[in-house]
Image 1 (cartoon, helix red, strand yellow):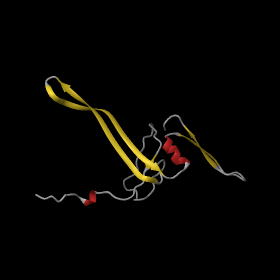
Image 2 (image 1 turned 90 degrees about the vertical axis):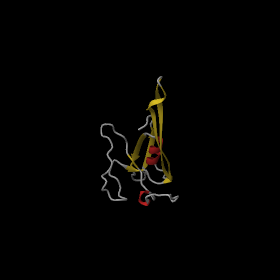
Image 3 (image 1 turned 45 degrees about the horizontal axis):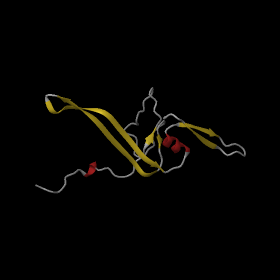
Image 4 (image 1 turned 45 degrees about the vertical axis):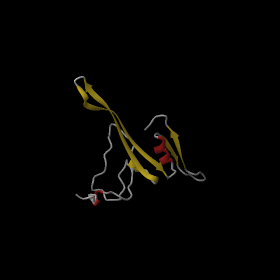
Length: 131
């Protein structure tokens, strides 16, 4: 018997990663890029990188279940999922109109192009609905 832990070092993932998002469209579900996309290459439109983060991205998953019981047995005969909660937590570091739109969950960005003597601007109108 050995007290030395066994593991496969190649299965331990380290280093930086990029996170991409896109607006969900039920009629055209999102498709991730092909597995042969070069490492570090940008994903094609409509995917957008979220930019720099304060502490990376944290993923959470929580499942709540109901026990299915019967009179004839003291232990549950089955467990059924009643609720799933998947969360993504990220502190966005880049203060742009696009990252604000992502953080607030919905809205519209209107761009006014620069002209002679007028500075170009982007205005975010936050929506009451989630995008």
